[in-house]
Image (cartoon, rainbow, N blue to C red):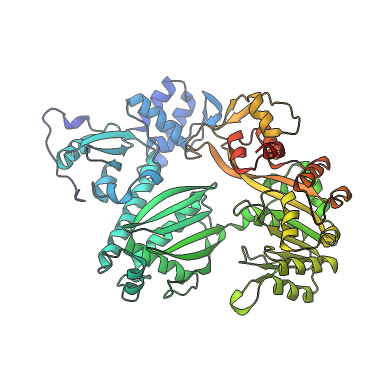
Length: 605
């Protein structure tokens, strides 16, 4: 479809005088009639509306008053609530515009930006049969007749939030304009089909990474990711177009598809910002960007590139300092967990391990712990690969494999720096494990991570690496295994019941009463209809008691270690998750998805 303004067309059957804007008076009158707003409040707003400047939509004016909704005393008459009410009243379908589900490039070709702004409308979906257009003015239909004649498609109107229409008008058209402008400058790259061609054409690409269109696209991408609470941004080249995806609460969401030449320039722009080698596209690289969120808070992004069949894949991990360093209660520790963890990290020397797969929150736990321990009279030193977050209270060193600075040599260096506490990013091999043990034996508290499924497996992993059992007896204080589960959205979670068999399978071998009521995921606008918002940790903490140390030898039985750990007070991950379910924070499905089977289930396999 051409991006041109439809010509006006006379309509003999629909008088033009029926087209009119929504007024504050009529909306307030209807709200008062339905007893949603008090007459006194409506009169007061009408008396002061003359003091306002500009053409503010009536629903926006009413939402700004923050009046309570009589139907739900705990809810306000917010803009979305009012929009949904108006849609029902005028007989139009209500729509919340989800930018993740809108093809920016496709919908912006339907009409010009000026035309959309003039009528306060926004196309949100285009198919071969119909065009769906969001409006906030239900009594203006002139554009509907014009579009139908020009596009030769069925026009379906939906009512949407006026603020969303205004915001996304700017974002959609600006982004589409930037992508189109960049694409027009990228001649010579349209026939790229594989990585080798991208490498050859990279030197002669006419699309400059500092072109204003590319700068605008990258800036929009970062700001949009911050607004959507994304933890990772994935830029993935494909044969025809490139995909942009956000990871939100652990789940990946498709955001946008960008022409491959534009994506190449975007990647170069980001690499420049991250002080990476722009020319080198054949080997992985790491970088870092420090920028600011829309609210002004500083945020860091860790960059990682990887060569693929169709070009460089780029992942940006977002680290917000306020999110990274939290109180233990915010992380999901129970009172018993906090007591046991403080008991571990309060020891003057020894090794404390945090285990779990990638993305399970180990870094957050370690940084939060070090933040608490890093008092002015304590020297905290770390060796990391890479440094996740620069923290002024720590002395941080990064692994540099190219010059021989690995974890083992890093720990050896740190031991000469008069440290009190040492954090080793990960114990990967025998040499690193030996240095960690040596540091613990010489009077240092060592915190580190391992990639194991649960806490007892950390012991067998260290034995497999080659650490002698007697050294584990002397140094390891305890192990914390963890996972992250999505928490239910506080705005839409609804009560439900729990089946006895499901609860027993979740809590085995603990005998925990079935909760009388649990919460279930429903989905609303606040959580993007997923039913979940945010994540919280579940933990399995095993302290090495004398009885447990006695089981560690050349032929250690993992099941016996696990059983003894539970006798000493260790709650399995699923039991920790079950307590979160009983507290109404998450669901059984979430806990089952991220945690390994209970001990009894594992034996029966």
